Image (cartoon, rainbow, N blue to C red; front, side, top):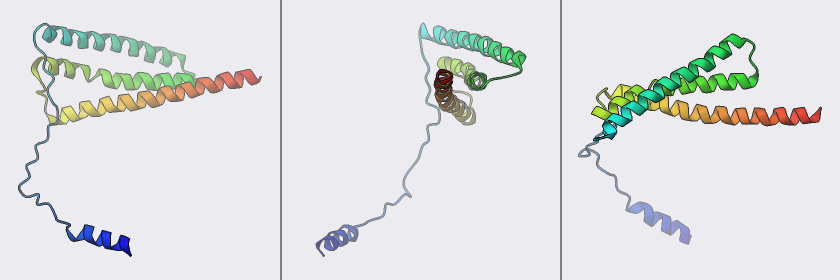
Length: 144
């Protein structure tokens, strides 16, 4: 009976909040503008990463395309290459952001963020699957 009295006292002073005078300002893409020597270095770094990434992932995709018969490990490497390519396409946007701030609009900012998140989580999941497959191949190979 004592617990019931505590709960009744808790709910007697319940008040609602008036949201009419609340101003919500959504910050979609906070700008990461750099200055000085970094204003030259950061776009250069992003550009080099973009070019090397395209070259590396393109090479991986070309080799897997020529191989035709793919093992499970090859499929995981293919998925890693595809998700990394998604991230590569956002690097030019980051280069512009480093120099001028985010000028491309909210939709492109959200798309860039989504591509980054897809890359992060798919990459982690694919690497975990690749590790499990590798461990299982060692265990199965040791049982023969």
